Length: 231
Image 1 (cartoon, rainbow, N blue to C red):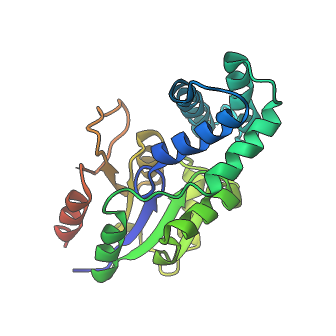
Image 2 (cartoon, helix red, strand yellow; image 1 turned 135 degrees about the horizontal axis):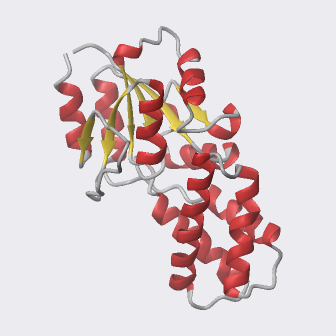
């Protein structure tokens, strides 16, 4: 089987972002006097998701949402602390929230055993993502890790993927696949860059109009089966 170049997303593909977000935001709001931690976590998750979608669409920058999301949270939870202070506390908690999805480490080892070349593609803050990846123990599994903040570009921009390709020695578009859970970032980005993709759709989410994954997988075993079937 020929070695493939795999561009693999981090959050909700390998790392358990939902658990990390819940742990981080509940620790943060508890510090500022909130007692309904589950309610606060649900509220923040919705706000945070909407903000990151704005980043993917180019409506807002990462720098803007860092404070914007906590302005909204502060207002709705009637917090006394400044949004900037809440943001710094949340970021510090996130740096230590490194939870792997079940089977993620074994999945990466199976990919490496098959001889594939592994690269990570992730939107987010450089320091935070590096600490989470190192803490989870998977940092060394990748030839290179491409974090949007460090790149100055983000998924799903074609320019992000073009820059990634330029930084991979012996890059071959015909042997490259994007693997990720996000239709709006990973799969749309693959479409924009003319790359094949595997949509990691564990939760059975519906396909969005105008986004076209080459393959769909509902588990790591499915991903391996797709890759093993490529000749």
